[in-house]
Each structure stands twice: as structure tokens, then as C-alpha cells.
Length: 346
Image (tube, rainbow, N blue to C red; front, side):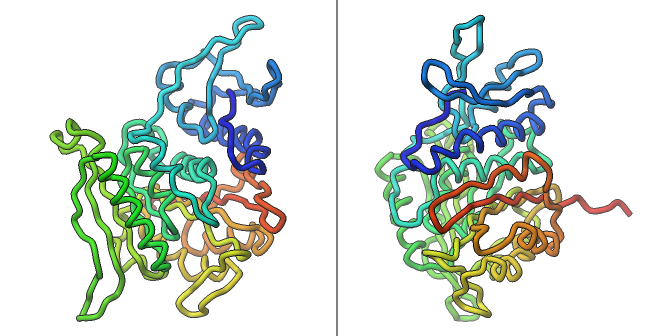
């Protein structure tokens, strides 16, 4: 597998090892454990991720692997030659939905896709990745990178963020992009949310169809973004209505984290303590949560304890522990993935 070039030099250096871990999770979750001997090799001066696939790859296998976050091209060894293996992707829209936004603090798009992928694969519905319309929520959505990636996959996408400027910027971007691309959509709600005559937040809700044919068939995706504090997520979304929660926590360097009680803090643990129980309540039994954060300001074990206290089961074995990588001099990012167990039978 040839790795997708990245404009981020530091991430590009880490991408091979991250892809190895992601590939192992794909293999265990949806490829029947047939992926083996994951390694690296240099062929013709280019570095590849290599693996064996017992029984070869079916069309479905290639369709699944086409969604690997850093997959650029896939080849099969035939003697000492490489034969291209066609990859298909879930992508429903042009990739500028993901790439066109540029702003300080934006999470690398390839990493956003990786975080979403491994969270999806930890859910009870991993085997339905190609057919299920997942509902994805980013409760710290910023300017919508994860929301856009969920849209790209054809999923229902929701987000929440307390920064009014980020909400306004994302609302302007998405509505302009949909109009410019002439994508069929309908605005269901846009403006303040009032309860008991008080404004409690702002909301943008849309229905989006990837094509005219999809719209006629009723094949529409929902996009629902709220401007409010993440600790109040339960006021806007009903319990057990979300398949996957994905969040890139503030790194405590350029951007701090906020809670309603403590205000601005550099410790994401305070944010997890306050917000994770509410996020967990939104998950359907069998759903999964994935979060990334800066290990320089919070230890992995401490973050895992916050998720466990919210009733989630943290996946803490290899390769789930293989995502630590440097972002810059002050940020070493890691990933925690947990799932919500189904209720015990009475």
C-alpha cells in the first residue's frame, strides 16, 4: 500500500506507522483476521506498508481498505512486479469538502479520517461499514472537519461547539459550498434555539442529497450543528441516538479546553470529567467513542479512567495503543477508543 502524500511533513513521517496500526484494526474488525505480517518495504525508492492477505482480497475487502485514512494506491506482488488493485471508497462528494478549509489549529484531514475509522471499527456495526448509515457526533467540532468527513462517507453528521466564531465560520462555509457545488439540500433550521424565552444556543440543521437521483429516492443525509457548550449536549440530542462519538480534544497549548464550571483550562481531563458522561449517554449500546488529545498535558491512563467512569470499555491492547505520534514540539497526540457495552440481560 502506497501512502497518501501529506502536506504536513511531521504527520507524513508518522503516517506509515499509523497506517500499520489502522490496517491491523481493519483486519481484525472487518476482514476476518486474514491480514497478517504487516510491515514496511521500500520499492523503487518509495516506502510502502506491506501485508499478507490469506486467500487474497475480494472486491468487498478492497472496498473496505479503500477507506484507510492514508491509502493512496494498493498493489499486489506478482513475482517481483506490482499489479494495481482497484480501490473504491465510500466518498460521496468532492474532496474539497474536506480540504478547502484552511485555518490555524485545523486537525490534519488524514488524522481526522483515521480517528473516525478506528472509532467506527470499534462499534458493534463495524461489519456494516459499507452499507450502514452511521450517525456520527463530534461534541468538540470546531469548524467541522469531522462533520465533513462523516458527510463524505454518506453518514448522518452532527456536531457541537461553544465557540460562536467557529460555528459562524462553519455555517458560512457549508452553506456556500453546497450552493456552489449545486448539491441538493434543504435547510430545516438556522438560527437561535430558544427555551422559556431564552436563547440557549444556535443551530444549523440540513438535509443533503448526494445527487438528484438520491433525493428522489429519499436517500438524504442529515447535518446538525449546534453552538453551545459540550457539557449541555444532552439538551440538543436525545439519548442513545448516536452510533459513534468522535472528538479531537483541545491540546492545552494554543487552544485550551473549557467547562461551564471552571472556564478556560489547559487540562483536557477536566473536560472529560465534565463532558464524557453526557457523550456516553448519547451512544447507542454497542456504539463507540474515539478521542485524541495531547499526552503532554494528560496521561493516557488518566484519560482512560475518565472514559471508564462514564460507563465505557476502553480498548487498551495492541494495536489500539499504537497511535501515539508527535504533532509539533509541544504536542504528542494519542488516541483512546472505547465502546458502550450492550445492557446485561435480566
